[in-house]
Image (spheres, rainbow, N blue to C red):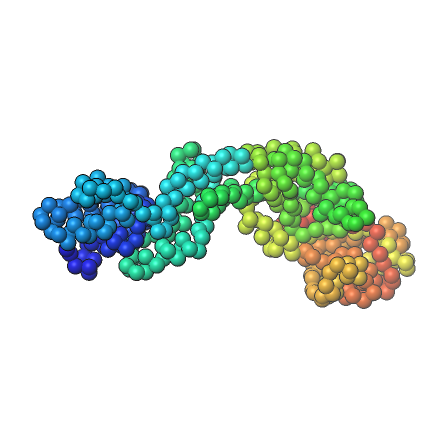
Length: 438
Protein backbone atom coordinates (compact mmCIF):
# COMPACT_ATOMS: atom_id res chain seq x y z
CA UNK A 1 0.00 0.00 0.00
CA UNK A 2 1.03 3.59 -0.56
CA UNK A 3 2.32 5.71 2.27
CA UNK A 4 -0.26 7.66 4.27
CA UNK A 5 1.60 10.84 3.41
CA UNK A 6 -1.25 11.56 0.99
CA UNK A 7 0.93 11.59 -2.14
CA UNK A 8 -2.18 11.75 -4.30
CA UNK A 9 -5.93 12.31 -4.11
CA UNK A 10 -6.79 8.60 -4.17
CA UNK A 11 -4.54 7.90 -1.19
CA UNK A 12 -6.13 10.77 0.70
CA UNK A 13 -9.67 9.64 -0.17
CA UNK A 14 -8.83 6.09 0.98
CA UNK A 15 -7.59 7.36 4.34
CA UNK A 16 -10.72 9.47 4.81
CA UNK A 17 -13.04 6.58 3.95
CA UNK A 18 -11.22 4.11 6.17
CA UNK A 19 -12.40 6.16 9.11
CA UNK A 20 -15.51 8.02 7.91
CA UNK A 21 -18.47 6.66 5.92
CA UNK A 22 -19.39 9.36 3.39
CA UNK A 23 -21.98 9.58 0.62
CA UNK A 24 -20.89 10.62 -2.88
CA UNK A 25 -21.77 14.28 -2.26
CA UNK A 26 -20.05 14.57 1.11
CA UNK A 27 -16.86 12.89 -0.13
CA UNK A 28 -16.83 14.95 -3.32
CA UNK A 29 -17.31 18.12 -1.32
CA UNK A 30 -13.94 17.51 0.36
CA UNK A 31 -12.36 18.09 -3.08
CA UNK A 32 -14.87 20.65 -4.37
CA UNK A 33 -12.34 23.02 -5.92
CA UNK A 34 -10.65 20.36 -8.00
CA UNK A 35 -11.98 19.80 -11.50
CA UNK A 36 -14.21 22.09 -13.54
CA UNK A 37 -17.84 21.52 -14.49
CA UNK A 38 -18.28 18.68 -12.01
CA UNK A 39 -20.79 18.34 -9.22
CA UNK A 40 -19.64 17.11 -5.83
CA UNK A 41 -21.71 14.02 -6.47
CA UNK A 42 -19.69 13.40 -9.64
CA UNK A 43 -16.43 13.88 -7.74
CA UNK A 44 -17.41 11.54 -4.92
CA UNK A 45 -18.67 8.84 -7.27
CA UNK A 46 -15.52 9.09 -9.41
CA UNK A 47 -13.23 8.84 -6.39
CA UNK A 48 -15.06 5.83 -5.00
CA UNK A 49 -14.95 4.02 -8.34
CA UNK A 50 -11.24 4.77 -8.68
CA UNK A 51 -10.62 3.45 -5.18
CA UNK A 52 -12.48 0.23 -5.98
CA UNK A 53 -10.51 -0.17 -9.23
CA UNK A 54 -7.26 0.70 -7.52
CA UNK A 55 -7.72 -1.80 -4.69
CA UNK A 56 -9.08 -4.49 -7.00
CA UNK A 57 -5.97 -4.16 -9.14
CA UNK A 58 -3.78 -4.65 -6.08
CA UNK A 59 -5.86 -7.59 -4.88
CA UNK A 60 -5.48 -9.28 -8.29
CA UNK A 61 -1.73 -8.81 -8.03
CA UNK A 62 -1.73 -10.70 -4.72
CA UNK A 63 -1.54 -7.75 -2.29
CA UNK A 64 -3.09 -9.14 0.91
CA UNK A 65 -2.99 -5.77 2.62
CA UNK A 66 -5.25 -4.46 -0.14
CA UNK A 67 -7.76 -7.23 0.69
CA UNK A 68 -7.94 -6.08 4.31
CA UNK A 69 -8.13 -2.41 3.38
CA UNK A 70 -10.98 -3.09 0.94
CA UNK A 71 -12.91 -5.15 3.49
CA UNK A 72 -12.48 -2.34 6.00
CA UNK A 73 -13.38 0.47 3.63
CA UNK A 74 -16.20 -1.05 1.54
CA UNK A 75 -19.03 -0.36 4.06
CA UNK A 76 -17.95 3.30 4.09
CA UNK A 77 -17.81 3.48 0.28
CA UNK A 78 -21.29 2.10 -0.15
CA UNK A 79 -23.03 0.74 -3.23
CA UNK A 80 -20.05 1.30 -5.56
CA UNK A 81 -18.18 -1.39 -3.62
CA UNK A 82 -21.04 -3.90 -3.28
CA UNK A 83 -20.33 -6.07 -6.31
CA UNK A 84 -16.65 -6.62 -5.59
CA UNK A 85 -17.22 -7.02 -1.85
CA UNK A 86 -19.85 -9.71 -2.19
CA UNK A 87 -17.77 -11.49 -4.84
CA UNK A 88 -14.68 -11.52 -2.62
CA UNK A 89 -16.21 -12.23 0.77
CA UNK A 90 -19.41 -14.11 -0.13
CA UNK A 91 -21.52 -12.04 2.23
CA UNK A 92 -23.87 -9.12 1.96
CA UNK A 93 -22.30 -5.67 2.22
CA UNK A 94 -23.80 -3.67 5.10
CA UNK A 95 -23.48 -0.07 3.99
CA UNK A 96 -22.92 2.51 6.72
CA UNK A 97 -24.77 5.81 6.68
CA UNK A 98 -22.89 8.99 5.82
CA UNK A 99 -21.37 10.45 8.97
CA UNK A 100 -22.14 14.00 7.86
CA UNK A 101 -25.58 13.96 6.21
CA UNK A 102 -26.90 10.50 7.05
CA UNK A 103 -27.45 9.85 3.33
CA UNK A 104 -30.12 12.57 3.26
CA UNK A 105 -28.44 15.27 1.20
CA UNK A 106 -29.53 14.14 -2.26
CA UNK A 107 -33.16 13.89 -1.23
CA UNK A 108 -33.04 17.19 0.64
CA UNK A 109 -31.74 19.06 -2.40
CA UNK A 110 -34.45 17.60 -4.64
CA UNK A 111 -37.27 18.11 -2.14
CA UNK A 112 -36.18 21.60 -1.10
CA UNK A 113 -35.97 22.67 -4.75
CA UNK A 114 -39.56 21.63 -5.42
CA UNK A 115 -40.86 23.29 -2.24
CA UNK A 116 -38.85 26.44 -2.96
CA UNK A 117 -40.15 26.70 -6.53
CA UNK A 118 -43.75 26.40 -5.36
CA UNK A 119 -43.24 29.05 -2.68
CA UNK A 120 -41.52 31.44 -5.10
CA UNK A 121 -44.36 30.95 -7.60
CA UNK A 122 -46.86 31.67 -4.83
CA UNK A 123 -45.13 35.01 -4.15
CA UNK A 124 -44.75 35.92 -7.85
CA UNK A 125 -40.94 35.85 -7.52
CA UNK A 126 -38.68 35.35 -10.55
CA UNK A 127 -35.33 36.62 -9.26
CA UNK A 128 -34.01 34.83 -6.20
CA UNK A 129 -31.11 33.89 -3.96
CA UNK A 130 -30.72 30.79 -1.82
CA UNK A 131 -29.51 30.61 1.78
CA UNK A 132 -29.02 27.52 3.91
CA UNK A 133 -28.75 26.69 7.59
CA UNK A 134 -27.38 23.43 9.01
CA UNK A 135 -27.47 22.02 12.55
CA UNK A 136 -24.38 22.46 14.67
CA UNK A 137 -23.71 18.70 14.77
CA UNK A 138 -23.60 18.58 10.97
CA UNK A 139 -21.21 21.52 10.74
CA UNK A 140 -19.01 20.07 13.47
CA UNK A 141 -18.83 16.63 11.79
CA UNK A 142 -17.86 18.21 8.47
CA UNK A 143 -15.29 20.60 9.92
CA UNK A 144 -13.61 17.88 11.97
CA UNK A 145 -12.89 15.86 8.82
CA UNK A 146 -11.57 18.90 6.97
CA UNK A 147 -9.29 19.74 9.88
CA UNK A 148 -8.13 16.16 10.44
CA UNK A 149 -6.96 15.74 6.86
CA UNK A 150 -6.03 19.32 5.97
CA UNK A 151 -8.57 19.50 3.14
CA UNK A 152 -7.78 22.83 1.52
CA UNK A 153 -9.94 22.22 -1.58
CA UNK A 154 -13.20 21.61 0.27
CA UNK A 155 -16.39 23.67 0.60
CA UNK A 156 -19.18 23.73 3.16
CA UNK A 157 -22.37 21.71 2.97
CA UNK A 158 -24.31 24.98 3.08
CA UNK A 159 -22.56 26.24 -0.05
CA UNK A 160 -23.35 23.02 -1.87
CA UNK A 161 -27.02 23.16 -0.92
CA UNK A 162 -27.29 26.80 -1.99
CA UNK A 163 -25.64 26.13 -5.34
CA UNK A 164 -27.47 22.90 -6.18
CA UNK A 165 -30.91 24.21 -5.23
CA UNK A 166 -30.14 27.40 -7.14
CA UNK A 167 -29.27 25.37 -10.26
CA UNK A 168 -32.50 23.39 -10.05
CA UNK A 169 -34.54 26.58 -9.65
CA UNK A 170 -32.81 27.99 -12.72
CA UNK A 171 -33.76 24.83 -14.60
CA UNK A 172 -37.38 25.68 -13.70
CA UNK A 173 -36.94 29.05 -15.44
CA UNK A 174 -36.14 31.32 -12.49
CA UNK A 175 -33.15 33.67 -12.32
CA UNK A 176 -30.43 33.99 -9.70
CA UNK A 177 -29.93 37.65 -8.77
CA UNK A 178 -27.09 38.51 -6.40
CA UNK A 179 -27.68 42.27 -6.49
CA UNK A 180 -31.42 42.78 -6.22
CA UNK A 181 -33.31 39.52 -5.58
CA UNK A 182 -37.07 39.63 -5.23
CA UNK A 183 -36.88 36.93 -2.60
CA UNK A 184 -34.43 34.78 -0.66
CA UNK A 185 -35.07 31.06 -0.20
CA UNK A 186 -33.80 29.82 3.19
CA UNK A 187 -33.38 26.06 3.61
CA UNK A 188 -33.04 24.52 7.06
CA UNK A 189 -31.44 21.10 6.95
CA UNK A 190 -32.65 18.38 7.55
CA UNK A 191 -36.43 18.56 7.42
CA UNK A 192 -36.08 20.24 4.97
CA UNK A 193 -37.85 23.36 6.16
CA UNK A 194 -38.06 25.97 3.40
CA UNK A 195 -39.02 29.60 3.95
CA UNK A 196 -38.99 32.54 1.58
CA UNK A 197 -37.91 36.01 2.65
CA UNK A 198 -40.06 38.15 0.37
CA UNK A 199 -38.27 41.38 -0.45
CA UNK A 200 -40.32 44.54 -0.85
CA UNK A 201 -40.94 46.48 -4.04
CA UNK A 202 -39.94 50.15 -3.93
CA UNK A 203 -41.35 53.01 -6.02
CA UNK A 204 -40.05 56.58 -6.03
CA UNK A 205 -41.84 59.77 -6.88
CA UNK A 206 -43.64 62.70 -5.26
CA UNK A 207 -46.81 63.38 -3.35
CA UNK A 208 -49.00 66.45 -3.02
CA UNK A 209 -51.40 67.11 -0.13
CA UNK A 210 -54.15 69.55 -1.06
CA UNK A 211 -56.06 69.42 2.21
CA UNK A 212 -55.30 70.18 5.82
CA UNK A 213 -55.45 67.96 8.90
CA UNK A 214 -54.03 65.08 6.89
CA UNK A 215 -51.05 63.43 8.55
CA UNK A 216 -48.23 61.78 6.63
CA UNK A 217 -48.42 58.54 8.66
CA UNK A 218 -51.40 56.48 9.70
CA UNK A 219 -51.96 57.50 13.33
CA UNK A 220 -54.26 55.24 15.38
CA UNK A 221 -54.76 55.87 19.10
CA UNK A 222 -56.70 54.07 21.81
CA UNK A 223 -59.54 56.54 21.18
CA UNK A 224 -59.51 56.13 17.41
CA UNK A 225 -57.59 57.82 14.59
CA UNK A 226 -55.69 60.99 15.46
CA UNK A 227 -56.46 62.26 11.96
CA UNK A 228 -59.25 60.95 9.77
CA UNK A 229 -56.99 60.54 6.75
CA UNK A 230 -53.25 60.26 6.03
CA UNK A 231 -50.87 60.05 3.09
CA UNK A 232 -50.09 56.51 4.20
CA UNK A 233 -53.75 55.55 3.98
CA UNK A 234 -53.81 56.96 0.48
CA UNK A 235 -51.22 54.31 -0.49
CA UNK A 236 -53.53 51.46 0.49
CA UNK A 237 -54.90 51.34 -3.03
CA UNK A 238 -51.46 50.17 -4.14
CA UNK A 239 -51.34 47.71 -1.24
CA UNK A 240 -54.60 46.18 -2.41
CA UNK A 241 -53.56 46.09 -6.07
CA UNK A 242 -50.31 44.29 -5.27
CA UNK A 243 -51.98 42.05 -2.65
CA UNK A 244 -49.36 43.19 -0.15
CA UNK A 245 -49.29 43.07 3.63
CA UNK A 246 -48.36 46.71 4.11
CA UNK A 247 -47.15 49.92 2.47
CA UNK A 248 -44.63 52.21 4.15
CA UNK A 249 -43.77 55.80 3.23
CA UNK A 250 -40.16 56.99 3.27
CA UNK A 251 -40.35 60.71 2.53
CA UNK A 252 -37.90 63.55 2.34
CA UNK A 253 -39.01 65.09 5.61
CA UNK A 254 -42.62 65.72 6.63
CA UNK A 255 -44.96 68.65 6.94
CA UNK A 256 -47.35 69.16 9.85
CA UNK A 257 -50.74 67.54 9.48
CA UNK A 258 -52.40 70.96 9.15
CA UNK A 259 -49.93 72.10 6.47
CA UNK A 260 -50.51 71.49 2.79
CA UNK A 261 -47.84 70.09 0.47
CA UNK A 262 -48.11 71.99 -2.80
CA UNK A 263 -45.84 73.21 -5.58
CA UNK A 264 -43.18 70.72 -6.58
CA UNK A 265 -44.46 67.99 -4.26
CA UNK A 266 -42.49 66.09 -1.64
CA UNK A 267 -40.06 63.38 -2.79
CA UNK A 268 -40.83 59.95 -1.38
CA UNK A 269 -40.19 56.26 -1.71
CA UNK A 270 -43.10 53.88 -1.18
CA UNK A 271 -42.15 50.45 0.14
CA UNK A 272 -44.60 47.66 -0.63
CA UNK A 273 -44.02 44.83 1.85
CA UNK A 274 -44.56 41.15 0.99
CA UNK A 275 -46.56 41.66 -2.22
CA UNK A 276 -48.12 38.62 -3.86
CA UNK A 277 -48.34 40.48 -7.15
CA UNK A 278 -45.02 42.02 -8.19
CA UNK A 279 -45.46 42.53 -11.94
CA UNK A 280 -46.69 46.10 -11.91
CA UNK A 281 -45.28 49.08 -13.79
CA UNK A 282 -44.65 52.52 -12.25
CA UNK A 283 -47.58 53.94 -14.22
CA UNK A 284 -49.88 51.20 -12.90
CA UNK A 285 -48.61 51.89 -9.39
CA UNK A 286 -49.40 55.59 -9.83
CA UNK A 287 -52.94 54.81 -10.93
CA UNK A 288 -53.46 52.52 -7.95
CA UNK A 289 -52.10 55.13 -5.55
CA UNK A 290 -54.25 57.94 -6.85
CA UNK A 291 -57.34 55.75 -6.57
CA UNK A 292 -56.94 55.99 -2.79
CA UNK A 293 -56.20 59.71 -2.48
CA UNK A 294 -59.81 60.86 -1.93
CA UNK A 295 -59.05 63.93 -4.01
CA UNK A 296 -56.81 65.32 -1.25
CA UNK A 297 -53.58 63.39 -1.84
CA UNK A 298 -52.03 62.99 -5.27
CA UNK A 299 -49.01 60.94 -6.34
CA UNK A 300 -46.62 60.95 -9.29
CA UNK A 301 -44.42 57.87 -9.61
CA UNK A 302 -41.21 58.31 -11.58
CA UNK A 303 -39.81 54.77 -11.40
CA UNK A 304 -38.67 51.88 -9.26
CA UNK A 305 -36.42 52.52 -6.27
CA UNK A 306 -34.12 50.62 -3.91
CA UNK A 307 -33.08 50.56 -0.25
CA UNK A 308 -30.33 53.01 -1.17
CA UNK A 309 -33.00 55.49 -2.24
CA UNK A 310 -34.75 55.00 1.10
CA UNK A 311 -31.58 56.00 2.97
CA UNK A 312 -31.08 58.94 0.62
CA UNK A 313 -34.61 60.27 1.01
CA UNK A 314 -34.78 59.82 4.79
CA UNK A 315 -31.32 61.18 5.59
CA UNK A 316 -29.58 63.28 2.95
CA UNK A 317 -32.69 64.74 1.31
CA UNK A 318 -34.56 65.46 4.54
CA UNK A 319 -32.49 68.57 5.27
CA UNK A 320 -32.33 70.16 1.82
CA UNK A 321 -33.77 73.61 1.14
CA UNK A 322 -37.52 74.06 1.32
CA UNK A 323 -39.79 76.96 0.47
CA UNK A 324 -42.73 77.65 2.76
CA UNK A 325 -45.70 80.02 2.47
CA UNK A 326 -47.04 81.11 5.85
CA UNK A 327 -50.08 83.25 6.59
CA UNK A 328 -48.98 85.30 9.61
CA UNK A 329 -51.03 87.34 12.10
CA UNK A 330 -49.49 89.98 14.40
CA UNK A 331 -51.21 91.31 17.50
CA UNK A 332 -49.63 94.72 16.89
CA UNK A 333 -50.19 96.64 13.66
CA UNK A 334 -47.31 96.41 11.20
CA UNK A 335 -45.93 98.82 8.65
CA UNK A 336 -44.23 97.98 5.38
CA UNK A 337 -40.93 98.94 7.01
CA UNK A 338 -41.58 96.28 9.67
CA UNK A 339 -42.00 93.64 6.95
CA UNK A 340 -38.87 94.91 5.23
CA UNK A 341 -36.96 94.68 8.51
CA UNK A 342 -37.98 91.02 8.81
CA UNK A 343 -36.57 90.34 5.33
CA UNK A 344 -33.27 91.95 6.30
CA UNK A 345 -32.98 90.25 9.68
CA UNK A 346 -33.64 86.79 8.27
CA UNK A 347 -31.32 86.90 5.31
CA UNK A 348 -28.76 84.05 5.70
CA UNK A 349 -29.67 83.81 9.40
CA UNK A 350 -28.88 80.83 11.61
CA UNK A 351 -31.78 79.92 13.88
CA UNK A 352 -31.41 78.09 17.21
CA UNK A 353 -34.39 75.92 18.08
CA UNK A 354 -35.22 73.68 21.00
CA UNK A 355 -37.81 70.99 20.43
CA UNK A 356 -41.18 72.79 20.18
CA UNK A 357 -43.38 72.66 23.25
CA UNK A 358 -46.21 71.21 21.13
CA UNK A 359 -44.26 67.99 20.45
CA UNK A 360 -42.30 67.62 23.70
CA UNK A 361 -44.67 64.86 24.83
CA UNK A 362 -43.31 62.57 22.09
CA UNK A 363 -39.83 63.92 21.27
CA UNK A 364 -36.67 64.55 23.28
CA UNK A 365 -35.92 68.11 24.32
CA UNK A 366 -32.95 68.89 22.07
CA UNK A 367 -31.43 72.06 20.71
CA UNK A 368 -30.40 72.34 17.08
CA UNK A 369 -29.73 74.96 14.46
CA UNK A 370 -31.24 75.51 11.02
CA UNK A 371 -30.61 78.24 8.49
CA UNK A 372 -33.06 80.68 6.96
CA UNK A 373 -31.71 81.75 3.58
CA UNK A 374 -34.22 84.37 2.63
CA UNK A 375 -37.76 85.56 3.23
CA UNK A 376 -40.18 87.68 1.23
CA UNK A 377 -43.24 89.27 2.80
CA UNK A 378 -46.51 90.43 1.20
CA UNK A 379 -48.86 92.61 3.25
CA UNK A 380 -52.54 91.64 3.44
CA UNK A 381 -53.60 94.11 6.13
CA UNK A 382 -51.94 95.93 9.03
CA UNK A 383 -52.12 92.77 11.14
CA UNK A 384 -51.85 90.05 8.46
CA UNK A 385 -49.19 89.20 5.88
CA UNK A 386 -47.92 86.31 3.81
CA UNK A 387 -44.31 85.28 4.39
CA UNK A 388 -42.42 83.18 1.84
CA UNK A 389 -39.57 81.49 3.72
CA UNK A 390 -36.66 79.76 2.02
CA UNK A 391 -34.91 77.65 4.67
CA UNK A 392 -32.97 74.54 5.44
CA UNK A 393 -35.17 71.47 5.75
CA UNK A 394 -36.14 70.58 9.29
CA UNK A 395 -36.78 74.15 10.40
CA UNK A 396 -39.80 74.49 12.67
CA UNK A 397 -41.52 77.29 10.74
CA UNK A 398 -44.40 77.90 13.12
CA UNK A 399 -41.91 78.39 15.95
CA UNK A 400 -39.73 80.62 13.77
CA UNK A 401 -42.76 82.88 13.58
CA UNK A 402 -44.03 82.71 17.17
CA UNK A 403 -40.75 82.20 19.04
CA UNK A 404 -42.35 79.36 21.03
CA UNK A 405 -41.93 81.29 24.31
CA UNK A 406 -38.21 81.75 23.73
CA UNK A 407 -37.45 78.20 22.58
CA UNK A 408 -36.68 79.52 19.06
CA UNK A 409 -34.22 82.41 18.65
CA UNK A 410 -34.42 84.72 16.83
CA UNK A 411 -38.06 84.71 15.76
CA UNK A 412 -40.49 86.97 13.94
CA UNK A 413 -41.99 87.85 17.30
CA UNK A 414 -38.56 88.95 18.59
CA UNK A 415 -37.79 91.17 15.60
CA UNK A 416 -41.28 92.71 15.41
CA UNK A 417 -41.57 93.01 19.20
CA UNK A 418 -45.11 91.72 18.86
CA UNK A 419 -46.77 88.36 19.41
CA UNK A 420 -47.09 86.71 16.00
CA UNK A 421 -48.79 83.47 14.94
CA UNK A 422 -48.78 81.20 11.92
CA UNK A 423 -52.40 80.74 10.83
CA UNK A 424 -51.84 78.59 7.74
CA UNK A 425 -48.70 76.92 6.40
CA UNK A 426 -47.94 75.43 3.00
CA UNK A 427 -44.82 73.78 1.63
CA UNK A 428 -44.51 74.95 -1.97
CA UNK A 429 -41.04 73.89 -3.06
CA UNK A 430 -38.19 71.55 -2.21
CA UNK A 431 -34.51 71.98 -3.10
CA UNK A 432 -33.50 72.78 -6.68
CA UNK A 433 -37.09 72.54 -7.90
CA UNK A 434 -38.20 75.53 -5.85
CA UNK A 435 -40.29 77.62 -8.22
CA UNK A 436 -39.25 81.16 -9.07
CA UNK A 437 -37.04 83.44 -7.01
CA UNK A 438 -37.77 85.13 -3.73
